[in-house]
Structure formats: C-alpha cells, structure tokens
Amino acid sequence: MDTVLAITFKGGVVLAADQSNARSIISYQSNIDKIKELTSHSAMGVAGPNCDLVRFTEYIAKNLALYKLNHDGTQLSTKAQANFCRSELAEALRKGPYQVNLLLGGFDKDVGQSLYYMDYLAALEKVNYGAHGHASNFCLSIMDKEYRDDLSEDAALKVIDHCIHEIHTRFLISQPNFMVKVIDKDGVRVVKFGGDPADT
Amino acid sequence: MARRYDSSTTTFSPEGRLHQVEYAIEAINNAGTCVGILAKDGIVMASERRITSGLLAPAKTSEKTYKLCDHAACNVAGLTADANILIDQARIYAARNHYVYQDPIPVEQLVEHVCNYKQAYTQYGGLRPFGVAFLFAGYDIHHGFQLYQSDPSGNYSGWKATVIGSNNQAGKSLLKTEYKEEAPSVQEALMLAVKVLNKTMDGTAASVEKMELFRMTLDEDGNCQHHILTAEEAKDVIDSVAAEASSSGDS
Image (cartoon, rainbow over all chains, first blue to last red; front, side):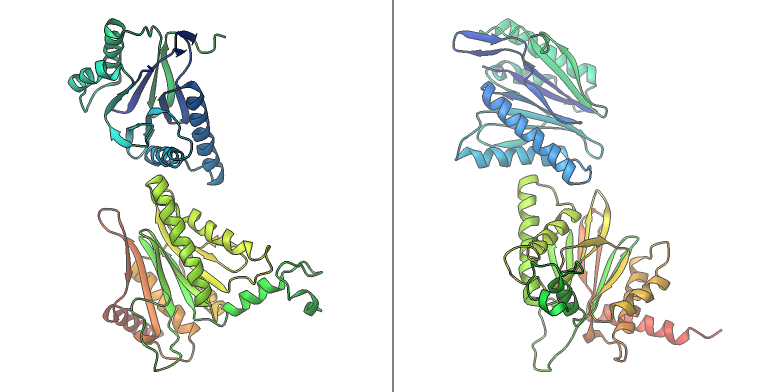
C-alpha cells in the first residue's frame, strides 16, 4: 500500500515516499514522514506497517549512532550501513521478522552517491533507482525509460515528479501527499512535502 | 610483601598493582624479540626465530607472524598456545564484522576487541592472564597503515616503531636514535628492523634462519599484500645491513 521511490543522480540521491498511515478502511494520518534519517549523510524510505517502520528505523539509527560514539567519530559507509540493515533483517527473519521494504540512500565522500534496495526477506541489491509498493508497477517503467547515469538533481526530481503524477492519475488508492528528500554532500534535506509531519 | 597479593589475578596489592598481570608481562621478556616499524608506504615486522632443537621440523608458514584478515596481521611474543586462542578470536571477529558490514574492519576495532578479551582475564573468573604480547600491523581507509602493541593487561597503544620480547629495551633505545621524524621507506624500515634484531640478539650472528622478515604494502589496486620475505630476499637485507655497518666509521 505504501509507496517508496528513489533515484540516484550525479552527486546524490532523491528519496520520496507517500505520507499516509492507513489500515483497512481507516486513515490514521496523512502527514507522516516515512523517510528516516540514519546518519548525517544517509536515509532510508520504508514501506510497511507503522510499528515495524518505527521499530526498525529507530533501532538501526541508534545503533549507527552508537557505532560512531564507540569508534572515535568514524561513521560507517553507506554500503556498510546497508549490509548491517540486511544482516539485522536476516537475523530477525526466522525469529520475529520486520515487515519492512526499504530503499536506503547515502552519500560518501570517497564513492559518492549510492542506493540500496532491500526487502522484508533480507534481499539486498545496489541499484540506480527503485520503487516499493503497488506503485512500483506504475513507476519502474518510467524510471527505466528516464534514468541516465549523469542526471542532474533537477532532472532527478523531475523523474520523481513524473512518477508521483502517474500514481495520482492511475493508482486506485489515493495518496495525495508525498515527502521528497535529497541526500548529497551537504547531508539530508527536505525538498518538499504534501503534509507537514510537525502538524499535530 | 608481594607474596600475599600475587596469587590471584583479581586482587589488587596494597600498592595498587596487579601482580599476576605484571608477572605475565615478565614472561614475555623471555620470548623471541619482535620489532615493528611503520614505513611511509607500508609496515615492517621482524622477529627472532628461536631454534630450540635441531630436531624440530621447520614451520611451514611462520611461527611468529599470523594473518588475521586481508588487511591485518600480527606478530607474537610469549606463550604460543595462549596466542593461538587470541588469534582465533581476532580472526573470527574480523570475519564476522565483514559478514555484517561487508567492509574491512577498522584495524583499531580489531585490536581493541582482542585487548578487551585479554582484559577480562585480569578481572573475572580467577583464571590467569594470557602470557602474550602482540604487534598488530594493519591498513584501513580511515587511518592508513597502523602499528599497535598490546600486552597481557589488555592495554594497547599505536606506535611508529616498537619492540617486544627479550631485550626490548635495547631495541627501543636504538629505534629512538635511528627512527627519523620522516617515516622510512619499506626497504629502509626492513634494514632498520634487522639492525634492531642484531642488537637484541646481541652476540649471535645475524642469519636468515634466525630472523623472519614480514612486510605489508598496498598493490596498485589498493589491496593489502602480506609478504614474508623469502630466504634470498631476507639475505639481501641482512647483507646490506652488514655492509653498511662495516663501512660506517670509514671517512
């Protein structure tokens, strides 16, 4: 039901996710932020029940903060963070699985931008772009067609807008609000959102 | 005085010392010397091979240098049996870390883990400490080439050059004068290491069978290369040191 989209560009990653928190026929909220910042230069967009979203993202984020404290300020690379997430998902899979699908994006000084696609069965793959949820049926073909290796940030945001427009036109479930974030050398920042998460 | 407080690892003496730990450190001073030197483009570790009996079969790879993972190795001074346990610990920890993060473990983390393991034996359980001192040599992208020394107390520190094992004080004083501010090249470091061993093995003539020379460098792809010098390569280094020594003093 959730939609998470991501695309890399030259110098960063764009992450986008819908903002609805709904179950069965009820909408609890239409302004939640499903893109959790992990470190100063990485974030993950998560699809799944809100409980697992919160539990998993906070667990990973705090473990990454602990690593930084224990190791004299060195941060894990995006690749290491993604593999850490994967190993936690794999560990929990046969005990009490997290039902989360995620797209983890990050920027490292040495390797630049990177994006990792992960699902609730602990599959992990490094990708240039990705989508989770029913919306992937509509959006992946758009990204297939429009992705280039040397996209600019604006061009990448346009691709995401194109995907969101397609979702609004063709996807049965109404997802009016989307949160869009960009990760680049300056860190993680919000580009736009439909509903303000701070608005309680 | 110390008699009453030295049989249990987990008891401080009135002077605030842990005698068992200190005795363990003493045990290492009887072991074969190991010297480690940080070079500009690598690390050099040289050890004294103590041949206790002519009937002993020569070790197939090494009896002093152990590979811990692709980018770290260590030299041992002390009880080899104790060292084997700790080396296993280090190898498992490095490999497990790689499984979780798919990245090489930062060298200091690996050293700290081994040291924390050693420290536990100075505080819990009533078991004796490990009678081993290590020289760890490793490379990672965070801090480049690093050299660490650890002892039975579980303490460790980073060094530019250091010596452990018998006569280490003589070795260290030589390093203090000979190790220049600007780090040596790997070749210069090898020669310096042989010089140090010559001093600590005072009396016995330097030879290929009595010394083991190891160097760690990066190849052009940035991968760590571990290399124990062959007999010919070692002989070359030993000979050049001897030549330099015999011609020094000539004006």
